[in-house]
Image 1 (cartoon, rainbow, N blue to C red):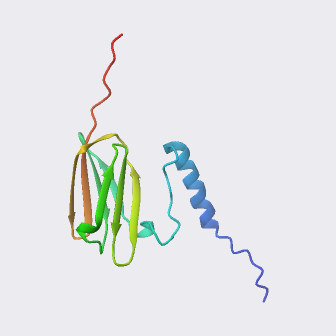
Image 2 (image 1 turned 120 degrees about the horizontal axis):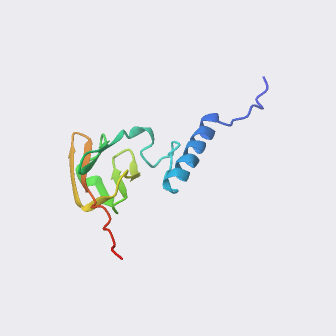
Image 3 (image 1 turned 45 degrees about the vertical axis):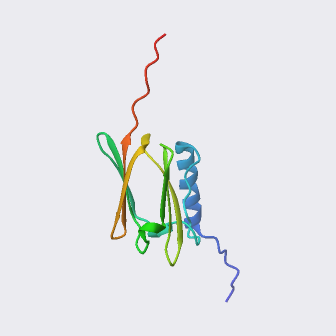
Length: 128
C-alpha cells in the first residue's frame, strides 16, 4: 500500500478562506480557532442579541468557576478570558454596535455567561 497521500485537510482551506473574507469585512479582528489547545474552539456556543437600546452576549462556559472569568470591553470588542481544570479560554467578540462599556452588567449561572450593555449614544452633530 502506497502511503504517499497528501495529508492536506481541505476543511482547513475553507476555514482560512472564511477567515480571510470576514477579516476583509470586519477589519482584521476575526480569528477562527482550528482546534489548538487554547481558545474556545468548538466548545463555545455564543449568541449576540441586539435589542432596542441594549446589546446582550450569551456564552456557554461549562465547567468554569465564576471567579475564573475575566471580562473586558473597549466599546467595540468584548474579550472573555476564562480557565477551567481542562483548558484556558480567550475569545474576542466584535460587537455589532458600539456600546457604553461602563454600562456593562454580567451574570453567570449554571455555566451560562450573560453580559448586557447599553448602546452608545449616536455621534453628535457638529454645526458649522
